Every structure is written in C-alpha cells, then in structure tokens.
Image (cartoon, rainbow, N blue to C red; front, top):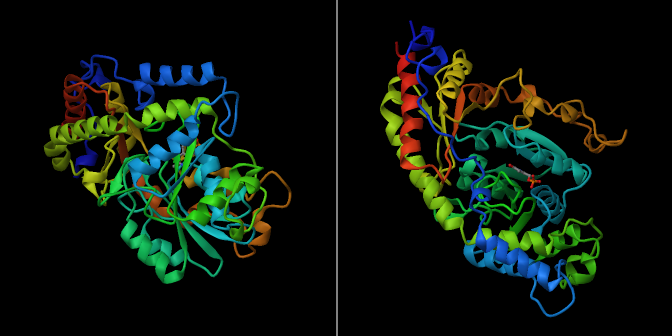
Amino acid sequence: MTVFDVVLTDASLAVNGGARAVSEALPPMYPGGMRIGAEEEAAVLDVLRSKRLFRYYGPGEAPSKVEELEAAVAEKFGVAHVLAVSSGSIALASSLAALGVGPGDEVIVPAYTWIASAAAVLFVGGVPVIAEVDESLTLDVADVANRITDRTKVILTVHMRGGASDMDGLLELARRHDLRILEDTAQACGASFHGRRLGTIGDIGIFSLQFNKILTSGEGGLVTTNSRSLYERALMFHDVAGSLRASLKETGTFVGTTGRMSELQGAVAGAQLEKLDDILADARRNHAALRAQVAEIATAAGVTWRHQWDPAGDAGIALIGFLPDSARTGQVVTALQSEGVPATRLFNPAITDYHVAYHWDPMIQGRSWSSRTPWDAAPDITRLDPSSCPRTNELLERAIHIDVSPDYTPAQIAQIGHGVNKVLAALLG
Ligand SMILES: *Cc1c(COP(=O)(O)O)cnc(C)c1O
C-alpha cells in the first residue's frame, strides 16, 4: 500500500468538519497592487496636473514619466535598452517582430505558460510549436532540441511563477542552431539567474505590468534588450509612427501597430519599480519560512519541490511541490483549500485553464481570426498538438501551487504551514 491509497478521513481535517488551520483572511495575491500607496498617487497627480498624458508630447515642460520609467528599469536591471508598452502581449509581439518572426516561421514555446506567449506568435504571423517543461516548470532543453526544424527562428522561454529557466542550457542550444532567445519574464519581474536579471540574458526580454504581476500599472509591459537594432525594431512595431522616431535607419523601417504606454501607466509603474526590492525580499523571506515549516512532513509524504535553476534568484512568490502521483492530487488540494491554504492544482483536464496548452482549443483546432491562418504558411504543422507534450500534463497534474504573498505576517505563514502539515500528515495515515 502506498500513502496514496489512504483516504483523507482524519476527523481533525477542516474538509471533514475539523477546525480550519488558517483563521484569518489572507492578503490577496497582487504583490505590487497591494502596495499601491502615496507614491503612486503623487506620481499620477503629477501627470494629471501637468496635463501631459502622452509620452511623446504635451503642453508645458513636464518630463515624460514613461521615459523616466524606461531609464530606471535600464539602470536597475543592467540592460542597455528598455521600451515601455501597453501590455505584456504587445511587448511579446513587438519582440517577435523585432526578431523578424513572420509567416512560415516557427517559435518554440513551453506547453505550460499563459496563452498570451503562444498567441503573440500567431499575431505576428508565425506558428507556435509547443515543447515540454521539466521539474522546473520551464522549458526542457533536451525536448526543445528535438523540436527544432529548419523553420525554427526563436526559442520563447517563460520564467514561470517567479523561477528562472535553464538559461545556460538554452543559450548553448540557441548558439548551436543559430536561434534567438526571447525571455517571457511576465511572471518573474526582478528575479535573476546567477546574478543576472531575467529578461536581460537572452536576445530580448519582456515583462507584463498587468494587475496580477509582481509589479503593476493595471495594464502595461516592457521590452528589454542590449541590442540597439532590436530595440529600434520593437519601437517601430509598438508605435505606428515609430519609423519616424527610430534613429538607426540602417535597420530598415516598417510600420507596426499602436501599443504605446500612457503617462498615467508610466507614473504608476515608476513608483512601483522603487518597491521591487522590498517586495522580492519579503516574498523570498516568506517562501523560505513556509518551506522550512513544511519540509519534514512533505518529504515523508513523498513531495518533491519544483526544481530551481537558481534558488537564490527565485522571486519567491510561489511554493510548488509535486505529489508522487496524480490520483489524490485533487483530493489533497480540496483538503488544503478547506484549511484556508491558498493552494491550487496546476492542471486538471476537466477544468479549462489557459495556462496549459492542453486547453488552448482555438490553436489546437488551427483557428485564427481569418479563414487563412499562419498555419497555411507552415505546411508541416497544421495545428498545435497538445498530445505531443504528455510529460508536461503529467507533471502539472500532480503539482500543487501555494501562493506566497510578500504581505503575509509570520502568524499567517505559521497557519498556512500548519494547514499543509495537517493535510500531508493525514495522507501518511
Ligand atoms: C500575463 C502574462 C503575459 C501577458 O501579459 P499581458 O500584460 O496580460 O498582456 C504573457 N506571458 C505570461 C507568462 C504572462 O503571465
């Protein structure tokens, strides 16, 4: 008999009528959003009072908040060029356009990411090809190697839930096959890989400032790169008049769309950036405390932790463990939720969730907004095929994700840890 043959019947569990482990309401998981305060207020009022709401001009002499944000990110992250845009999705499309992705090109994306990563490839006319993730819940480098064809142009790696991809492995693979790397850092703002900020290691990186992310301006995004020509191409894509603003004419001008950041967003994002160090320090401290509290019982119950390519660089916003098999994962998550633990299961085939390629129905059916689609130009690939990534589904199906807010108090962490320990101990019988 394995531990998973034990049914969770322990009467002390909240799911069976026992006392809940977490007695108070926990702070919502909006790390930057929950810290909006006087600084954001003052910055927004500056913009309104100056009447300059547009980054490129306005009445009076007020400096552009968006430009100031770009300079501050460049300085803080140690990257040469930063372009602020209206969303993470536009940041992705602008970066893919900067890298020259278009009809007939394949871009490798992980089978576990927010759907926007793959949708951006279609938006610029390319075709997303999914690859497996490993125990880090980021691209499995060996599997990526198997998906490379002579049409592959870019590896779009996603630093999911605050944790880095294997950037050493990906850079080496990309070098061997002459591919470019786009780092989707929407969920890992400020995290790093062996001392270098995520989003600044590959050819180009993107961030989202949507409300769920580590820093927020409600909506918003950033493009980061050390290449002047990639920066200029992203600039031209994100601003339909950008070809008039680009200074390096030798990169060739083209016309894109309009996804500029407003000064109001820039004001909020600039104030948020100053809070990044505190947010990360608090999340990392809470992550370490929670993991230490549950480590012993988790190990006894056969839980293994998500692999971290750089534990010290992880943003700390999520504690993710794998149960030994998926059969009881749903039951365990229900029991955790009854205790008040902010736990979710990362994949359930029965519940549509656009974080897993298995559920990307429009792409699986090869549909886009027109009867002619990007797949027409990629004849070897007729549609996105989720059955090609069984390992990702298998891993995610037994993965339990616990939110780690930077705003938890020590008492709240103690209660969450107690809830986890109660449920895992009950599993042990
Ligand atoms: C949120 C997110 C995006 C898209 O960002 P938006 O600002 O919502 O467009 C892209 N990739 C990942 C991994 C995300 O989590």
